[in-house]
Image (tube, rainbow, N blue to C red):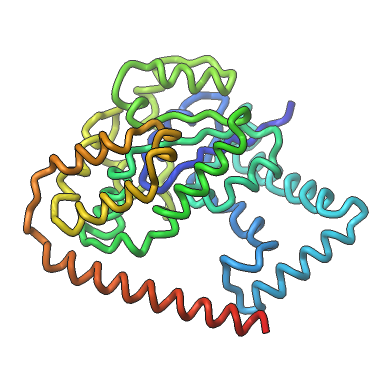
Length: 316
């Protein structure tokens, strides 16, 4: 069998780079820094969600019509797209290994498409405590400032997309929690490698720092800070989400995700709410949080109104 794609799907800031490096330490798994390769390929047929100077709406319509006119219709288009991507994976890995691991967190936007386009792929869903994800985004991308509204597409659409894809294909995917991978014995890693039909060697958990994934895209902090598996990140969110504004927003976010979706991910809503409530509140950065939260609300409302207006005009 030729080299197979292996997709690691998660929200950004979920520890996916650590998992990628451990997997890539295995001789049968090749990888590269975040490729983003399939996003423009799949969005080429979507009328919404992307902007192009040549008009995304018109381009998507034209490409779909072209695909439909092929001898076998869309199946021919997908076959050639699959061949194109697999050829690039093979070149990137120089033919090494059973799998090419593509870890691109924004693939949550196309998670469902991946299952259809690559029927032989292995797909791993990586879950992480949503409070940790929110805090990591605020600290890493927001530099400690409360502007997480900029990443609503990841925090809200991402959760919904990943849950929907996992529930639609439970027999073709494997799910694991970040906390289980770093917080205990190696059983979680053992089971993950069993899903891949690969032999697990505990030395992978100490050899992964040698995997070089430094690039413009990817984790700018974890690859340098963590040279070994560590439970330190598991409670770091408590120091970030201490202000009343952040705690209130986080409670609403957990309730939006809901008990059912959190259960699919392996978490309990009430338990997370209790942990959040137990975090001592701090007035530090309160004024900045209020100002930024207010700006984010007005900005989001204005953008939605403008987008709706432009879409109506485009339809006409």
